Amino acid sequence: NPSVLDRVMVSYYGAETPLKSLASVSVPSSSVIQIDPFDRAAIKDIERAIMDSDLGLTPQNDGSCIRLMVPSLTQERRKEFVKQVKNMAEEARVAIRNIRRDAVDKLKKLEKDSEISKDESKVGQEQIQKLTDKYTGMVDKALETKEKEIMKV
Image 1 (tube, rainbow, N blue to C red):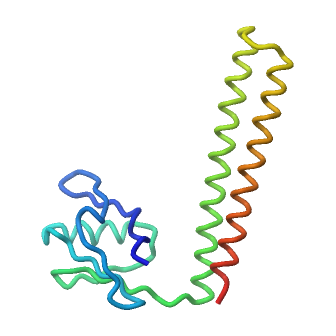
Image 2 (cartoon, helix red, strand yellow; image 1 turned 180 degrees about the horizontal axis):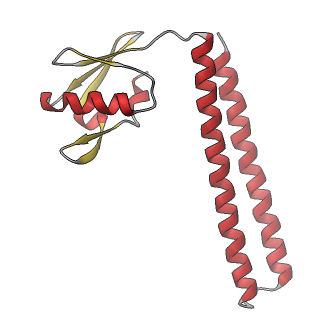
Image 3 (cartoon, one colour; image 1 turned 60 degrees about the vertical axis):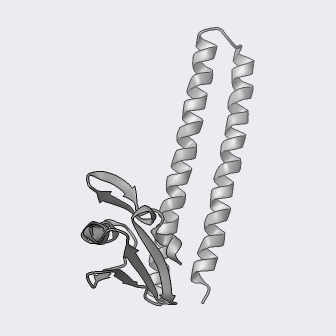
């Protein structure tokens, strides 16, 4: 699926540019992704960006286009993907907890400045915790679903 390249940013004349702005991406066969740069001078930059990305694909440059051979999913490769998905889920949980911490800090500051009462602060913190639990649960559920999807042969 060529959408795996959507996150790839290429350093093009000093500016970070999305790959899809610099090249057309096609799928000539089920195991090959072909990248045809609009500007042939950018081919080395595109190649470097793909190698520096976390895709785990090695670009093959023939001078006019870049081909990415997508290996068939072995059990080992599936486990690597699951590990990546778990890392992404953990990053999402951390982001949710950081948002909770910021919101609770704001409530405590309002309470300290006597803009809200202790009871209002406590109720607000409980609501924030419920939302945190809800969204953390959604991340966990998405992780579980994606893990099953990846491991299914």
